[in-house]
Length: 90
Image (tube, rainbow, N blue to C red; front, side, top):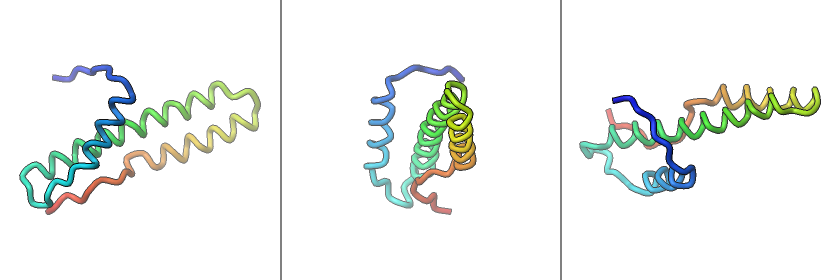
């Protein structure tokens, strides 16, 4: 099943905070799944921020601000996927 759902951003952020608060033991059976889900959610936040950074390029009112927005967009794009999640035991 590959359907998307819409949830309020505040609820999405609270969900991430809740998952970060939980301390799943390193050798628990769900550790891999927990880390994978948390990583996916954090990357989704990065993608939302990247989309916002791109919209700043489009809506820039001057060439200088467009250039600055583009630099910020490229910086964020370079960091995509680089999020802090607990290590997965292997």
